[in-house]
Amino acid sequence: MPNVEQVEYWDGSGGKHWVVQQARYDQINGGFGARVVEVLSARRGERVLDVGCGNGALSLAIGPLVAPEGSVLGLDISGPMLAMATTRARAAGLENVRFERGDAQVHALPDAGFDVLVSRFGVMFFDDPHAAFANLARSLRSGGRVVFACWQELLANEWLTVPVGAALAHVPMPELGEPGRPGPFSLADPDRIHSILTAVGFTDVVVDDFQCPMPMGTAVEDTVAFMQGTDMAAMLMADVSEDAAAAAWEAVRAALAPYAGRNGVVLGGAAWIVTATRPL
Image 1: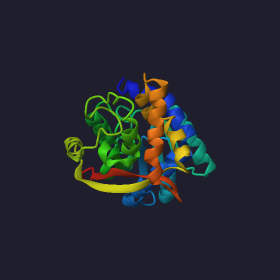
Image 2: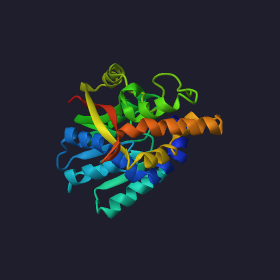
Image 3: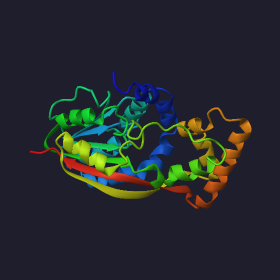
Image 4: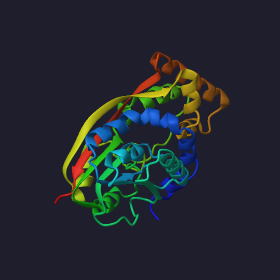
């Protein structure tokens, strides 16, 4: 079975964390999702596949745009997040939006079953991205469209460089693994995106820069409390002394202070908005 580590994480502690912090993550990443919806320009009646749908924010935004004839299927490997997404769709009365558990790399999707493939930060976690995008390509009809957001390189993203850079003055750099391995920045190289998508048959591949403010919390302490519960914090603080960890978090507080204002703590984020087409 592929993506074993990702399945264990997102179906376990990672997914549970994202469910607890659903409203915050929707706020943090909302600008990127809105950009995907804007570029998509969904049409009534379209059948949409949302890959790595998580708590369902993107699916919920698109559902009303394709209703009543159109539909949205959100696909994810996280049971906890899918339960949250299903609850939200029911609460919103979106009968044309449903969610299914599955790994897009190998899931048995219907051939030519969708008009559009979308994702907000859900396509960077495949063991074999070529196999995954080939599987997804088969699920698109001829002329079907692709619109997804993926992160640019770590150094272009303040939401990580500001707190992590401050902490690293007191704790060692964690092992990040080989470049291109499954994770948030696996598609940070636009040339790699072009190569993967064209290799599996997509055309008209465009990788556009999109930068967006990311509201991280209401104040510095609120933001730090949130960050302390993330997997990045767990990596940074693993096997360090209490004194070192305390010093690192004090440094993070000091680093975040200049970004705090009337709208809370706001850091910058940089993503690629990728579009492509399955040929006729």
